[in-house]
Image (cartoon, rainbow, N blue to C red; front, side, top):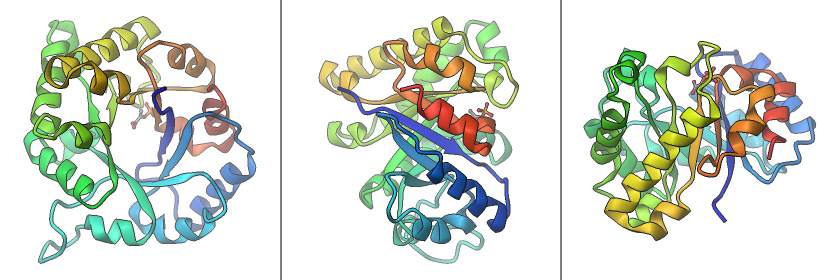
Length: 249
Ligand code: PEP
């Protein structure tokens, strides 16, 4: 059985007091889900959140990392630093980082390796733009992002990755991919992995969907055979909606 996840990416939202209030609401919302729940706040909240999560099953994630252990990289945060404050998952290649900070899949492959080398798990995002989908290039784009970002890994390393399919046109727009559209791409991702790593790896890797997941569409998406959960943006900033999505498993 593949591991299920519901991960809330808070992006650059909420100061420490408001963030603590939301986290406590989430902890108290008695989520009853078969999925691993992950909260991914801004870096600056991680240490405090680690203390607040000690007696909870909720895991902590970071939104990015640097590919070196330490050094003269002003403004950056390393994986050992993240590990020291209890982080277990690191989102890499979110479309906002690819778009605003020009991160590409080849440079992301070094971050993926760094996260794995320190025993943490990357959540590697891939997805196409609206133009690419309209031109019928979405499968090519996703294949390239997977190949360049992940396919240097060995089998065990790849199995420690979580993949998030996030069509750029669905992120923060209120437009969700239909379950059929999402399932089609998830199945394509699994087949692409199978063609390189074989069926065992493809069948066991978790692939999340992200893009305007809400309480009223989560169940239908999560029921698709190749969708193993969600990476949630806007709806993760409200404890009731995040809990409702988590409880869709
Ligand atoms: C995201 O940022 O990864 C995301 C999926 O955002 P939203 O749920 O708001 O579309």
